[in-house]
Length: 221
Image (cartoon, rainbow, N blue to C red; front, side):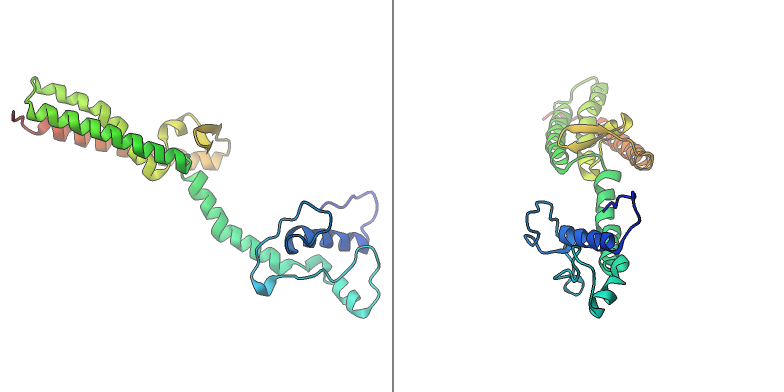
C-alpha cells in the first residue's frame, strides 16, 4: 500500500493502509464489499484474522481501540513471517526447480519423451537389422549415432526438463513451445552449468551405444 507523501502520515492513513491489507489479502473471499481484488491468502487457523478491529473513517476512541492502534505497524507481522517462510521453504525451491534448474514446461518435456522413444525404436531397429543382416562394410554402423543422438538428447531432456540447445541460445520456455530470453544472470549461470552436464551425458551415452552396436559381430539369420 502506497501512502502519498504530500502531507504528514496520520493515524488514519496507517489504519486505512492496514485495513486495505486486511481486506485484500486476509479477509475471507467475498467479505470486501464492491471489490474485485480480493486475494485471500491461506493461513493456519492460529494466524487467521476474522475481522478488522478498527475503522479508517473514524478516530480510535476507546481504550481498546487505542491499544490496537499502537499495534497497527506490526499488526500482521506474524502473517507476514508465515508468508515469507512459506515462500522461502516451498514456493522458491519449486520455482528454482521449474525455472532455474530446467527450461522446459511439463508438456514440452512429455513431447520430448515420446519423440525420444520413437527415435530410440528407430535406432535399435536399424542397429539390429545391420547386425542380423551382417551388412558390410561394418563402418556403416557408425551412422547409428544420428538416431541415437536424437533419442538420447530427447530422453535426457525429458528427464532433466532441460534442453541444452535452448540454453546455449539463451532461451527458456514460458508456455509449451514458446520461449523467452533468459535475462537473470544467476539463472543463466545455473542453466548453462546443467546444460553442459546434459551435453556431456548425451555425448557419453551416444558414444557408448554407437560403439556397442559397432563392436557386436554380425550374424546373418
